[in-house]
Image 1: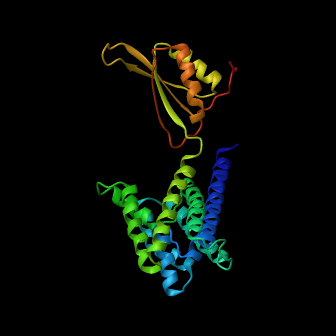
Image 2: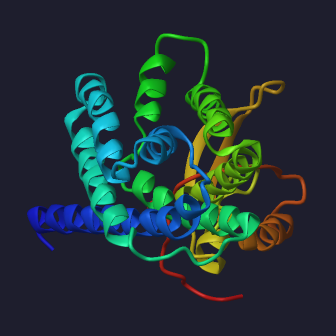
Image 3: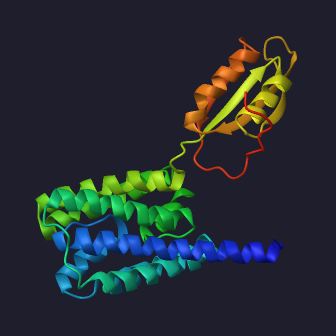
Amino acid sequence: MPKKQNKTVAYAKKYIMLFLGTIITAIGLEIFLVPNNIIDGGIIGISIMLSHITQMPLGMFIVLLNLPFLYLGYMQIGKTFTISTLFAVLSLAYWVSFFLPIPGLTQDLFLAAVFGGIIIGVGVGLIIRYGGSLDGTEIVAIILDKRTSFSVGEMVMFMNLFILGSAGLVFGWNNAMYSLVAYFIAAKVIDVVIEGLDESKGVMIVTDFPEEIADALMARLGRGVTVFHGEGGYTGEPKKVLYSVVTRLEVAKLKLIVQEKDENAFVTISEVHDVMGGRVKKKAIH
């Protein structure tokens, strides 16, 4: 496929997934959270409270409150991110209005918080995974991250705890606590969507038999292997270090392969959040 066509397909996929993410998020909001006076974090949470107080459309506040942050994002982060975020914000504003006439599926606050949090987590996770955002507070956190000692996650958490706490003054403390439940569930689901269900693991292997282990990993797991040239810190002897990425389910088989080839190999396994490529065609199954 030509490079230009590849780029077009990638852009089309990106905006389709952003669009799908906003539909899913709107369902979580209008079918579960909003009818039960439960809020999400960030700009959406503020918008839900303002919409409740003023009886004006939720979508209008989502757009208006995000506009200053979109300008900041354009100036500080870049045009591509800002365009993707603007598209997601406008799309969400439309879909929350579309689903508004549909009655909520449950009046049970716990069920609304759990299922609303799960659905919103899936929607927002898709949007973030494909380069967009729905929350101006994240843009502020990204900008402040460069100027303070606090991480993006810490700043977003602080702002959201303040916003979720404010829900107690608007909807009552019972609903504020359910809002906190929905927020934490959504946050965990977002992590799963962004990082994937495969739970990939990065594996480094220091061995005296690098060729044998590399061949076995490529043949039996179908995984690409990168070879680094190192040196023993104590002996000064040259060493070859293998690096590969496998799924959680393949870790046990990888350990077995390494033990078969070199019982004295040194192996470290760490979390990997996103992976592109790395597979090779399997030569044989042993």
